[in-house]
Image 1 (spheres, rainbow over the protein chains, first blue to last red):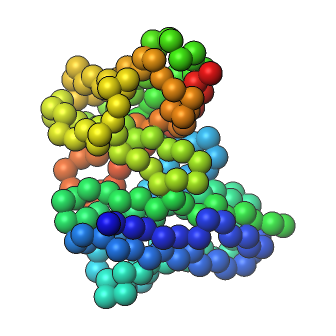
Image 2: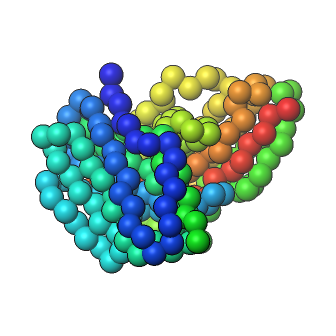
Length: 109
Length: 113
């Protein structure tokens, strides 16, 4: 079966750095997405990785290793507004999005 | 405002009621999706429409009935729902390459009593 694993919840301190991991086992791979979802709001697109390596976009970076079936989202200089759920999703060989259950990130002052 | 608008934002309905959820996008996207989001579970794809044609129905119970009258509007008709159907129902749209990602609406929080 297809599976995406990510931690259920993480806590970090304002101003610090946090890394949210995602591992996947899917039938084929056509890219990995990270979305951010604040409570009661729409998920919003953060990043898309299809090649190995690190993609940096401001305070957020996303890393992919296809051989290891592994990705992480790195958030730097954490702000209170970064408190949200972070969803990992993989596009499989049929171009279907397979979703993880999301990681709830709690930022403390 | 994400470009995808869903109404209503909240809905409480009895198990014998009939109601409809509405989704609207004016992004020029050609694909629209209904997802169910339950607490601590992955997003569940329910229905997919490409160019108004339904291309995916992931074994969704018949008490959920989608309708796509044009490429900008998508409905989810609900009847005789069960309490376990209570969830956040998200609509999304996309255009062309999946690498561009999906644009989601803010969802309808449905409670079945």
